[in-house]
Image (cartoon, rainbow, N blue to C red; front, top):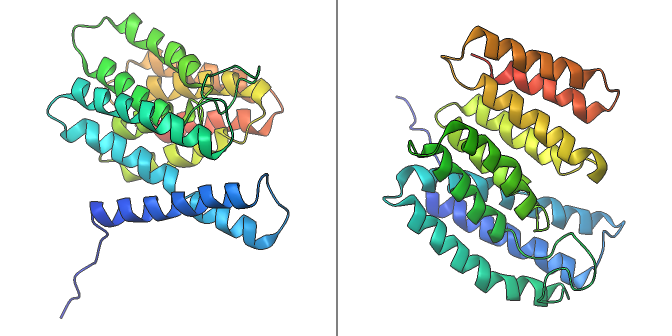
Length: 241
């Protein structure tokens, strides 16, 4: 007699994400700042479950939706509504950049909506290849000031590209989550390296010259002693066929 494996369905995962996000945001409101207390850290750790689940469902939504541009439009409407709730809860002015700060100017829905746009751009056969690659840094700049920054764009994008490959998707989540911990001065450089390497290596039909270019790019990155830059070399190897 064999026991059937039990899996969480989509609704159960969404419920986990909602509960975890609620716990995390209430913790930020009740205990402002990163308190050096174990139970505050524990509550934030629970909240960290939300982002990977949201990223996964964005990728899945782009695969199953009948009209990806309408899907993006609905997310932009949600981003506009949630902007006021997010900023009110955390005492952030409704008008972005009015305080001179560049970070956390709106909620994560802004980045997730742009993630769908980026996926739609790469799915389109009418858009030239150069424009697709140009869209990556442009959208990253647009979403950089939001919660979770442009990481919430790039991770869903690569989860979609690696759909059906659990190992690659797990690496995506780990690497892009680590990116969030990188110092701001190095974040855009590492973002560029990871994007170039992953895009060059993800195609099983990639030309040898293209693969070699990706590895050269990563080897140059590894010459820097910064530990997070060396993650890019690992990414290129992991994503190669």
